[in-house]
Image (cartoon, rainbow, N blue to C red):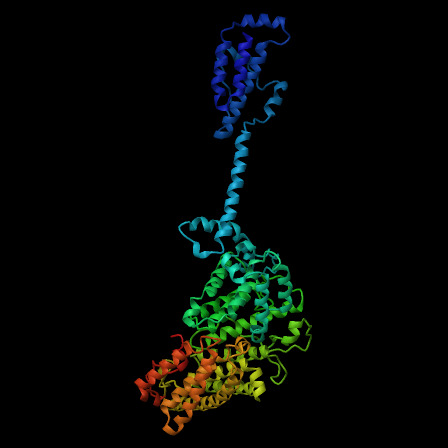
Length: 638
């Protein structure tokens, strides 16, 4: 009999908590069949009555049920525990000490087999997610209907690394420099990029050719640092931003057939897509910024607009994000270890300034994104010393240093670009009075002209600093063109009086005189450039040709076309010969940069067509309608 009771009790203890209540009731019904005297007689023969054991066990079960119900339902416990009549006299407020150990023992109903299966399934899902991210992230063109899954994978894998810079943009008072992030994984490099780069030997050839050609006129990549990085990366799995830089170095050496072919070129598309994938992945490194600058220069040199303008703006903001534009700005990059690292960042920022001002100068009313360099800003040091790693100490030049001091071609280009920026700001400012306009024209023209005389005092100097000469000529002709062909009949939305009209005419005549001097200087420049590119069979001469001079040749050509159409026949014959020289130079330069004979010559055709349709319109530069601007530079990219 007691055996059956204990068996029922064991079944009760082995069941789930939700069945305790029913089992308890069944035990009570079994015990009610025994009269109390029988239990008392049994208790005389045993030191501990079995009923006491059953009673205490049943109490434990009920307390456990009541405690669990109170925890789940979060309800106060009842003051009394009603028990059926047969066992009511055996109630105790709490179980004996011998059973309190059982109350403290946790109940574990874990299915070990299910837990192991769950762990295995989690590992399989993690493996699938990792493989999905490595396949999707470098190929944005493969985004399809499963974009939600891909976006989630990217956010899990990359965004936490990008969000480590949050505090630098939410609170600029935080001066702590974030820890250096791990380099971008090689898993982010798509297969098409690896095909373009080739093996280790081909990548080394790309670097060597770059430093022999492009580096001569755009020295923004440290040869020392890149060589040490290549030794570590090319032998194994290279980091993603280093692969992007190698791809951009190959791209800028590449010459497509024409501007239309350049935008559809497979190498160009591959570089743009790879750069976009790293942007989505949250990669912010100096190598990535350098690669984006090379891509933007490629777009500018081959007439891929407005993509070049947009890429240039992205480079400006990326440089500001990294903090290389100002020493006191929040720094994303780690502390420079040597002066070579510091100089490299300065050169990258100078190229950002140069590129933005060059692209923005072709039209009016396009504001500059980057701030003007300060007069105390350091100029790039000697290129040969930087390439060799020789330290340059206090003799470094600053922007306000005398123009007669010796400087490298890249430093001269930085100075010329600063002057070009001043001209852009002047042309974009329409709030000045005519008196201030006249003063600015005189000051800017004199400063630019004096600097131009220093860097082009002879043919060898003009050939050595031809990039800076081209930028200075572009700035001067933009300044003169902005005022010489304007109508000042209405100025700042108001009519001019007689005195102001006379001042406006004086400004226009002064700008026309400066323009003629610029054309004469530009023709000497054309002859020097013709000597530089006369041996077209020499691939090296063309490969190392800078694009910074092309706009100055176009500006000169556009004004010569205007003078040819509006001058008497005697003077027009001389202008025609000069037009032919400029056209010939642009066609030669087109073998390296498609913008020369592509977009620029198309703009010249538009100027000639306008002159043929209405020649008298240009013969009276002071009478056009107020809403019309005859500025020739505005015809580009319009």
